[in-house]
Image (cartoon, rainbow, N blue to C red):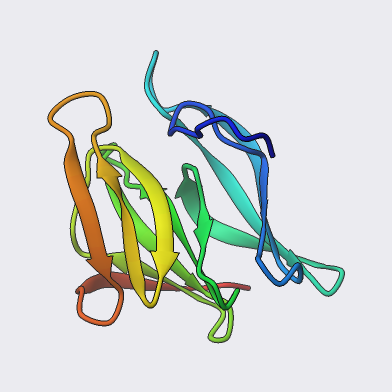
Length: 142
């Protein structure tokens, strides 16, 4: 991965966890609509196994410092985003109740996720505490 700023329109194909044991990797990725951010399939790789994550995801992805959780934008059918928290120890994806326009993640530290929503128009800061936020869905990673 280069040092350039990653955006929802231009992000890496794979993200290695800080401990080097896990990889989140995109498969097919395309624009949600013409000129819109990217969306695609995503896979979790570790111990020579490949798990397909159920849903359509965007980037960039951020890992927490312990390599046991990652945050990733999750696209809904009506083209909004929710924040998805991938919990490696539970092998579950927790989908936020809160809707976002376009998520651009920056940092995941001490159960807090930082970033911005809508980086181009009416930008708002994201300060998401995974312990206190509500979740609308939990998806098993199989």
